[in-house]
Length: 510
Image 1 (cartoon, rainbow, N blue to C red):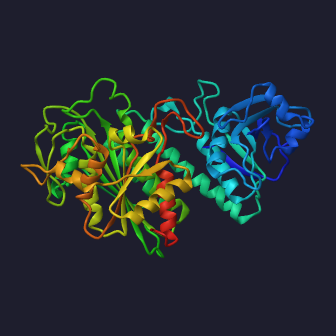
Image 2 (image 1 turned 135 degrees about the vertical axis):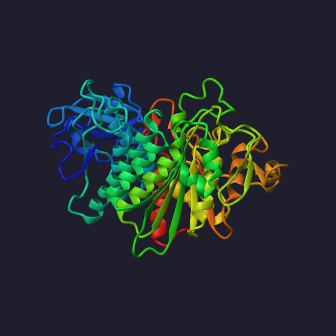
Image 3 (image 1 turned 60 degrees about the vertical axis):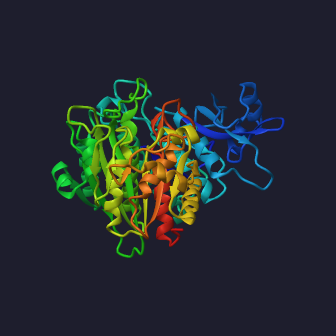
């Protein structure tokens, strides 16, 4: 992974492959941002004019490279757009800095060192630039098939930027050092989630995913329990078994837990882990199967969040439940019209085998509730309806508690993950009634994302606060990279879950 250092050196004096500066969009043209004074001086105070000649405007995400002027140790200057110049007295918000740093890090892919002289006026700014640069530096290593961040020796310039030096950082300041350590730990786990999501399904089935969790648990002192198909059958996990029974790769339920001796609160995180989703007998149409390796993004996010909590030593108990299965059509697959007996005793009529995520989550939510956590949050690439409602960059939030819904929305906003609170209308509940079971796994077509949330709510134990994050849109980026977001697996919701854990540790669960 990319190394991150704090530097007290001047941007002009730091040896690097490139020095990164910010440029904003002013009323009369581009404006060089705070932090780039030494670089601007090397250009005789005319860096903004040179950038304008090259077509730079300062628009957010815009990247312009130019040869360095004499007096700079770095041979290249990389100017990244910050958007509109902030009002007098205001600085740039954290997400603007994250995205700018991410865009710059992506542009420096394959380089050894980048000196980031972006606007850093306080600890919050330094944290944002650090996170953005590390997130943007990610590359998926296709050479070993299993993912990773190593550089492919057979190709040039496809590895991540090796080192980020934050100009204006304070290496002797404990708070700045702690911020760097947190950013490094957090982004390493976001990248773990990205690697898992990008790994082809023939290399990551439920058993392999479970083994990854066990290995990480041993490394970080976590407790794990893995229920294989025999244990699932003995325990009555009809939802997970029903989804996975059509595949040659049997399902798993993984419990991975971090505990702190002084913790006062416990969070249970439940992740949908469909390692490949064909739709089952209700087969997906052509053009909808190719990216379905990403249908385990929720489980990847939960896994990564629990490991991050352990790395940071958060004063909270965090239990992750990874509901892992492969949804395939075969002679043994669940058929539309079949009735499954779920963990806990409820029965479900399966009207559509492509509505499988809610089935595995239902089993895991019920099991998580038996431990009586203070709150349960499930994360899933659950419905195409949520993508239609909110687009590709925003996830939906549904809960059984309005205050908790507000907390989750606030937490996501704090870390720069776009989200939107969604309702659970009572009138949609009747649509999942079934004449042959306690409920059906499908209801009204309109509002399908909300119907899925209503279904999951049925499996939450009385008295437990619950939240549902439908990350179907932002979990996998099929278009080009932007800001610090790569193409492919994004690691959506990891940062939100970690921030929720931090706030819970501070006594602010909501």
